Length: 96
Picture 1: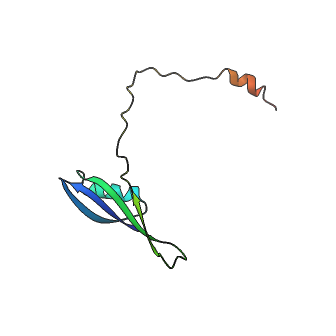
Picture 2: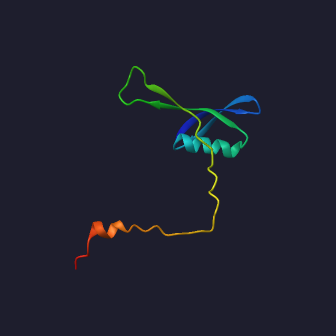
Picture 3: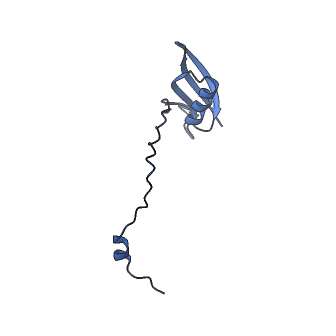
């Protein structure tokens, strides 16, 4: 688990929250479960580079993940199976 620092806007005020998660999308989902009306501004992860003595800490900024949900297509009630007539010409007869 990694510690993500999430900056978010709630009712016009900026807030910071530290959330433990395996990836930034999961961290932002946890925050949105706590505060459904929140708008995520930025998600930051502090990481260490292996073997780098001069700059041991690296900050990685992630933008907000998309929370858009696609609308389902309307059901027209007609269902047809797609057939590919040309496939039998390409494959040829089966061998036994």
